[in-house]
Length: 265
Length: 255
Image (cartoon, rainbow over all chains, first blue to last red; front, top):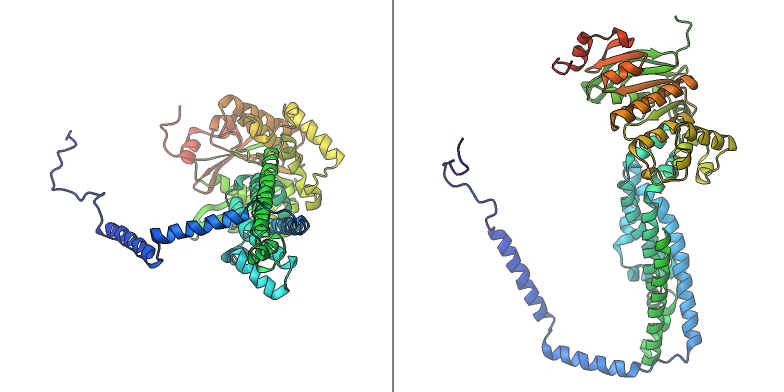
């Protein structure tokens, strides 16, 4: 029996040797980073003067001014309504779109175009979609609602389709073998396997819609964002602070509620 | 003999997954009465393919499969689903819907008789609910009705699988290696259960299996398959070592 070192046919290539290309690539990335910092004019002086401005802003923000609470409240209520309507309809639509996009349930001629539609929904940031809708359907809450429905579909339908693609097809096969129709198979063999994940996606999306509903107003699509934007433009920084505090508490309250919801499922 | 109604008739059945490379090469047999029929043969000889062709979970390439006078190979859509209700299936890995309760799994045998709307609302008839409880009792799992299916042991899951199959009120039950994932004692219990239902409810049961001794013990007829062909079809007493050598190849494994 020959020992491990007895094969003498010259040295073999080390499979872990350094590659010049690899090193070169890292050097290139580092050089580009240094160049970018220089091109943006980022230096210590600029940074310190920026901090100074921030200090002035904070000074003017305190104490927060809740005098115009009626305006604040009506903006908040509108934001909440936008978030609620868009989440419920977006999540409901995603349920069907997600099933249609799942490659293990649908033939390619259905799933490919549906996947294309989902990719389209995901390809723009909500701000850009909001601007498009404000231009096409006009100022106000409708534009905000449509924006967030599109955002919800882009996120949930995609994740839901991926969750469906990971299910056990054995269970599906067994229900199919009982003579159940396709929709009964979905209800009985697919949904039980993915429903808890769907609830997870849905609560996360509501959270995201809640935050985005305070943003779409900045481009005129309704909600608290509009109030925030005009307060900024009129240099009412104490009112801005009041609005920001309201948004933070809104998110915290939802955070608390969603923990409760998740505990149920 | 031609006057006897044939519950299931398989004629010249061929299946090719890859063109020119048949898995089933013209299988012929028919089943006319209740009782256990075992299909034995080595792995990869097309036993599972045969069973899956019979309820059209996969499509046959050529040939006929006649169930209650209808050729299932030529049906699709609603008529196919109606035929599938007649053909219940028991799986090697049980294939229960794990996140549903034991009761929901048993009742899922009725889905072929219900609309989607009824399935969504779990709107079963009182008669279905009564027979589901009765079946769960007769497989010895009455007290587990509300438990989730994934909390059961392998043998218990297969009992639920059998209850689901009987719940379909089928003309025939297909069982694809129902005991292969179980220990020898549980395997015998499952075979006894299948035999009991076959006799009580007058349902023929077609079982794929590896275990020749288990097949000889329970089946009243054995179909031996090798390389996609039927090489033996007859009573268990008639099967000889020569037949077994032909089916499985070699002889070192024989006692």
